[in-house]
Each structure stands twice: as structure tokens, then as C-alpha cells.
Length: 356
Image (cartoon, rainbow, N blue to C red; front, side, top):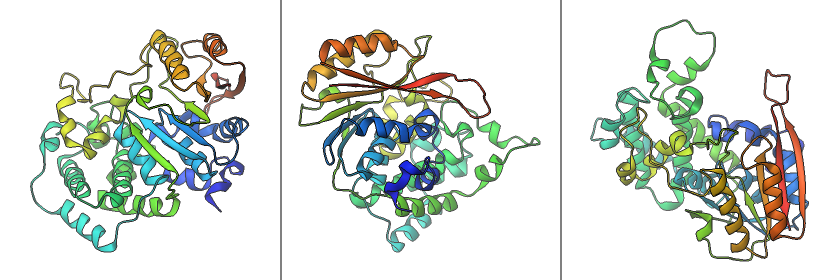
């Protein structure tokens, strides 16, 4: 089935496979993608230009690109943008000789970097950590057009071997302790890295769009010079009812280190999982979120603003709508109940606000 048929597929097909292991690619956004895309497309004409700010998983960029839109993706995490480049933007497969050389280099006895000593005993057994470290070194020296899919396969391989598919805890013992298990994760955790890596490379090759209509921007979207975007789509970090924001640098900062080892200087050694210190953004408190939303609406005065959020988050939906109504003539509200697996109750509602 073609990649662009996913709206009728309830996110089966390509999304089910290549988004399998990163929890940032799961959750409510994945479940509501057909509904979300229908809402976004109600306010766009074919081929128009969209800024996907806070791109995160890259799933919205992938969906928009597959529908023929021109997309600029921005994020503070390098790994998010590498995912966009791998799955939506222009990239290529590894040549057979490159793959063979990569696997030989990663598996050979040889020098690793500081990464292997800093994270010893935290996320992976030492031999696996050194394999990751050396494969990262090899990919960094590949031609630029070959790096995105190789890094994406490396990310997915690392996430597949992590409990909860995250790097938010120093919980290697959860994987290695000898206990009776009633779930199938153990087989995935113990599958060798070379097998995971080859598998995900094949999936990237199968599902990548390889579009020339995708650009990426690393940093705060407020630093993007105003351009002819028809829509600025915002999927910012969620701030829950207690005012706590989603700590994506805790969750995925380790992947950025695989791309750029110089980020070691930003590691917080006070925490057990040694996360990267987050780049201060505009969505760390409810007040900062409102200030940032207002600045974005002023920074892109002619663009429609699409904001994806949850009804139980902060700032409240009414507050967000009120601000958007002050800056645009009309705000359209879309809402969809969120119900999680194995739960009979509706936990909240996914909301999409479009100001124009």
C-alpha cells in the first residue's frame, strides 16, 4: 500500500513499523493522526508551505510531506531533525560496502570515546555501549547524505533495547536481572545490536519519502525569519495540570550525543541518568508558553496558527483560545476524546486550535 494511503489505515502500514520503538512516536498523537491531519488540511491548499515547529517525532512532517506540502521542521533536539531528514527529507541508503564496513568497525576491538566511560552501567552493558559509541563514530564520517538513515537506524536500535524505550532512568538492572518475566521484551532487549541496526536500515529504506520539499531548523522557532508559511503548526511540550513540562532532553538527549559527542559538555552529572541540560525554551511554564505563543503569532503575522494540545494541560484551552482570538480574526476548535489502551474511561481530549 502506498505511503500516502495511511489516512484510511488507522496508522497501520508504514507507521506501525518504523515508529515502533520510540515512545515519542507513540501516545496520543499517533492515535489521532488521521483526525489531526483532516483538521490541518481543512485550512490548507495543496502544495502550500508549513512550518512544523517543535517537530518532535517528525510524524506530522512525514504526513504533510506525503500529502505534497512543503515543510520546514524545527526542534531543539538534533535527533528529532535527523529523524526528519532520514524519513521525510533527502537521504540515501547505505551502500552494501558501507554497511559491511560499519558493522565491522563497530564490532572490532578498538578505541571508544568518553561516552562509553560516562554512561558505563547506566543504559547498556559495556560491550553494547562501546558498540553504539563506535557505530556513532563511523556514521559521523559517512557522506552527509548517508548519515540520516544510518543515525535513525542507530536511534531505533538503542531505543528498542531500553526499558520503556526512554533514557530517563538509570535502570539497566531492570533489563539484566534474572527474574521470571511474563512479557516479550526480554527477547528484543537481548537481540544483538547488528541485527537491530540492519533491520531498521531496511525499514528506513522501505518507508523514507526522500522529498526535496523538506527543510530543517535546529533551535528556537522564534529565530526563524518570517517567511511565506501558510501555516505554523505547533505541537509544543505538554505542560500537565501540575505545571510540569515534558522533559524531552531527559528522554532523548542521549541520542543527540550519538550525533554530536561535543554535547558531552552539557551533561548533568548530578542526575543518575546523566541527561543533557535542556535548552531553555518557551514552553517550560504556563506563563512562558503564553508569552511564546504570542511572540510566534507576531513573528508570523500572515500565517495561520495551528496548535495541538490536550484539554487537561496548562495553559487551559480557554486561555489559549482567548490569546489566539486577540491576534487573529477567527479560531476553529477541533476536539477528540483520548482513551488509552486497557482503559474504559476518557482521560482527556486532544485539541487542535487553528487561528486565521
